[in-house]
Image 1 (cartoon, rainbow, N blue to C red):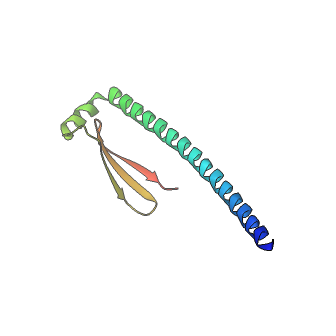
Image 2: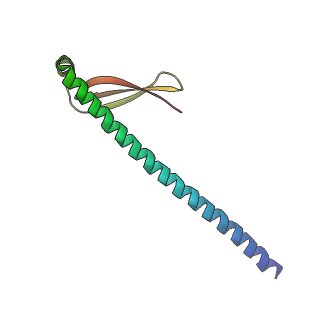
Image 3: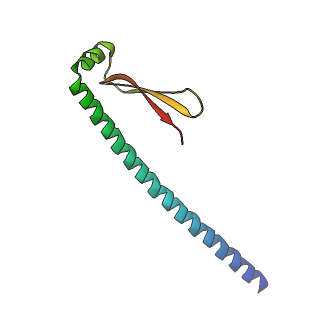
Length: 103
């Protein structure tokens, strides 16, 4: 009987750990979905602001069209130091730099 009780206790402890990890995974998945949604919204807002900038300053459109040979987006990630990352993006707006700080 002692062996079966020992196995039952181990089973229940493993079951508790499994349920706790399952809950943690679900929480992380939910957090990831929220973060992805926020990132999409920020990207949309950024594109909207770039459109407004181009509308407000038409000379930028001429400069961009003469400098860019492609309308494809090219992302290149270059780190200036450990905390800062510079991303150069080529789009219909030309090349612009976006600086991010890793938190």
